[in-house]
Length: 219
Image (cartoon, rainbow, N blue to C red):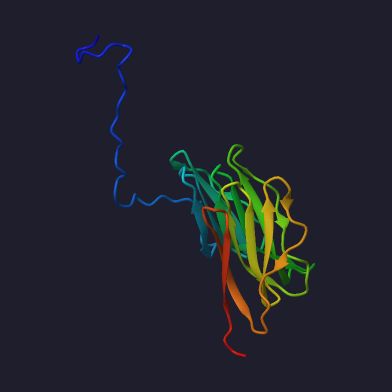
């Protein structure tokens, strides 16, 4: 029996939850420091976080071209930034799953043999939280003579995801299944005689996806 009259059979552990600290923390650099002789700008990209506090940030660094970088926030600290895109990678979107994995989509410029920019595709890479590594890039837009832009992605509670982008003046979507990978072909969502732009996608707690986009008002 302890000083409070509790026996070993009846004693309990108790605690008072600590309230979150209000306000912003100090700024922390998540990219490498760059010499502006070689890099003229760092372009903002995207960031997402799950309920457990795991976050992934992406951005593009511009030198002679754009290069995509990423950094993950795990266990209360940012890691080491990693280049995840090849020459001409930019405009990323990222979504973090409840398990801490992430899926990213971005624009990937294509070049001819002379180094001239000739087209743009949408590519994807996935982050494995356990291994702390990224998969190889996969093209998810269709092959075409016209260019693809404005990718956006959202992942549901099971780790499945949906990506959308603008291509040939319409909005397209492609689903990622955590077991099967990307579906065979994308689906055209819009069917407008006018131009459409900047699609964005979100997902709710019931794993229902919603897409919005801008459409020209001219007939």
